[in-house]
Amino acid sequence: MCIGQIGNLLPHVVVPAIMAQHLMPLWKLSGSEAGLMASGYAFGYMLAVPVLTTLTDRIDGRLVLLCGSLLSALATIAFGLFADGLVSATALWALAGIGFAGAYMPGLKALTDRLPPGDSSRAVTFYTSSFSFGVGLSFLVAQLVADGLGWRAAFLVTGLGPLAMIVTCILMAPHRPALVNAKLLDFSPVFRNRTALGYILGYGSHCFELYGIRTWIVGFWTFVAAQNADNALLGPIAVSVLFTALAMPASILGNEAALRFGRHRAISVAMLASALIAVAIGLFAGASPLLLLVLILLYAMTVPADSGALTAGMTGAADPAFRGATMALHSTVGFGLSALGAWGVGVALDAAGGPMSASGWLAAFCVLAVGIAVGPLALAWSRARTA
Image 1: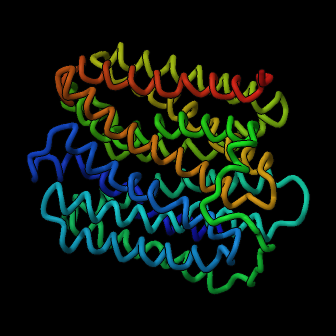
Image 2: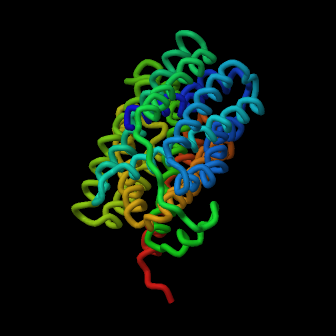
Image 3: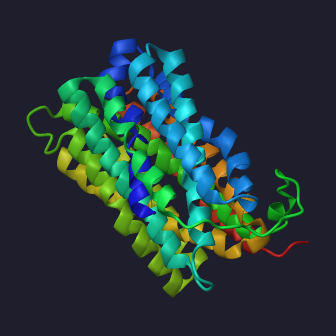
């Protein structure tokens, strides 16, 4: 399942990976327009995931996973063949997001349905952590192919990745979920589960920050490299891959810390540390590349440190009969705020001087800091006694 998910993630950040250096100059896009285009993926995901993930409470999640993986592949390839501007690119990228909505959380449901009874925290964390490895590979492949063969080739090549999950689905044993009497989109049992809802809201805060920085990490380091042409240390490709590669061990370590020190405490500390580092990056956006690289690598550890712990907490708190619906709301909130994060950073950049100004990046990182700082408040609310 982890290998299949890495294949599904190969197209995941092709737009953010090549946006600053290829698509923005080609189509003359502003920061807010580019952010809107990149967030199309998360918007498509957000609209589809409530139905597709809740459906796994009624049918084998493997079937949803298979169809979602196929759509993700076809939409990514279609982008490479047909996208010719902001509107067509956003529409096709949203279609790819719909495909991924049938792949990520339904894949997690298909996995947890097949795990033995007991604590599945580590299995869930490895699955969610492989997400970051797949994103890092997506950054690497997309940029290398785009630089060598052109930006359209990047979509055609990465569009083949979901074939790995299609093969995985074919090899999986069937599973028949227990019958559920609730309506398909009835989330009322989830809203009554305050513990699970706290993790869901915290995940939304995490996704706002995560997708915001993943959408713009290449753009940020392009700015740093341009300001320090003779001493940039690393190029945007290397920085974006390093940033995402560190996410997998960070997420695993974050979950281990949650098991040892308490889930809410570990998550809140990671979120607050991430907010402080984001502000520091913004304040020193015009400083030396060495200082910025150190801060970016620290940020690469704090941003995903809460991911596995949040998702494992949500699955553990979910009512087994409504686990699919709980995962659906978890993912809807998360990717809805992902879209807002990608677009919000672009808006902040435009409002404060643009992506080639230090003031623009100060505003952008402050937006990310505010977004993640909301997470500990959501967790505190979930533990507070009701009146």
